[in-house]
Image (cartoon, rainbow, N blue to C red):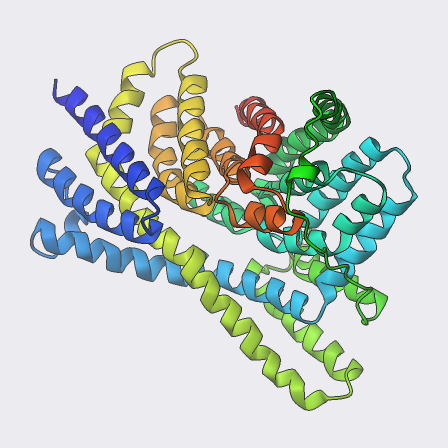
Length: 458
C-alpha cells in the first residue's frame, strides 16, 4: 500500500506542476517551489536524508542546502559550458559569421526546381547547420531572413515554408547544451556519446523526415486546395525582410565551426585533452585576431566582449537557472521514489525496458509541449535515469537519449515555443495553425527516436 502511495504522490505532484506551467507560471519558480515542498515531504515520508551524511541539522535546512550544492555544482560545471557556448554562438552572429554561413547554405537551394524536393534538401542543410547554430530560435531567425524568401520566390506556399522551418528542431551534437548535460548525467565524454550513439539516432530521424517531407507536403497542399482553404488568404501578410549577403569574407563561414572542429580533432589526438570550454575560448582568440587584422576600426573590437558577456548572462537566466531549479524538483521526485517503485514493479516483465523508455520519453515530450521548452523537462527528469537504468540492467543512455531528443521534438510541437512563435509571426500565421501542420511529422520523428534509441543503445 505504501508503494502505491508513493506512485500516487509522484503522479499528483507531476500533474500539479504541469497545471501551474499551463497557467503560465514561471517554470523556474514552479520547479524551485515544488522541488522544495517535494524534497521536504519526501524526506519526512521515506526517511531518506536530502544531503545524506552532510546534513545541516534538519530537513528544512537540508532542502535549502541542496539548492546551494546544486547551484555551485551546475554553475561550475555544465552551466559554465552552456554559457560559454552561447556566448560564442552570439558572437558569431554579431560579427555576421553565422549569418554568412546560413546565407551561403541558402544559395544551394536556388538551383533545385522540384519545389517539394527542395524542402527536403533545405531540411537536410538546416539540420547540418543545427550542429553549429545550436539554438533553434537563432537558427529559425537566420533561416527566416535567408532561406524563407527563396522558398517564397520558388512558389512554395507560406504555411508549407514556415512548417519546414519549424522542423529544424533536433538538439544534437557535442556543442549542444542538452547533449552536454546528457553526457554529464551519463558520465560520458560528450564526443564519445555523440560519435557512438547520438549521431546514429539523429541521422535516422533526419533521413526518415527528409524522405517523408515531399510526400507529406504534397498531400497537405492538395488537401488544402481541394477544400478551397488556402491558409495564406486567411493570414495577415507581413513584409519579409530579405537579408543581403553579409559584408564579411567568405572564409568567415568557417569561424562558427572552429570549436566543433577542435573538439572532434582532439578526440582523435591522444596527446591533447581539450574540453568544450577551452575549444570555444580558442575560437574566441582566433576570431578576435582575425577581426583585429580585418576591421579598420580596431578600437571597437574590445567592446565585443560586452556582447559575449551579455549573451552568457542571458544563458544563465534562460537555461542554467532552469537546470538548477529542475535539479531540485528532480531530487525531490527521486527521494519520493514513486518512479523507482514503478520501475521495480515491472522490471521483470517482458518488454519492461521499452515500456519504461516510452513512459519517460512520453513524460518529457508532453512537458516540452506544455512548456515550449526542451531544456526544462529534460533537466528535470533526465537525472532520474541512472538509478532506473541500473535497476533494469541497461545502459543509462537507453533511457536518457530518447528523452533528450524527444524534448526538442516536443518543443517544436508547442504553440508557445519561442522559435515557432517567431516563424509564425514572420509568416503571418497563427502559431497553433503552424503547430498543427508540423505535428504529424514531429510525431513520426518521436517514434523513430524511440525505436532507433532502443536499437542503438541496447
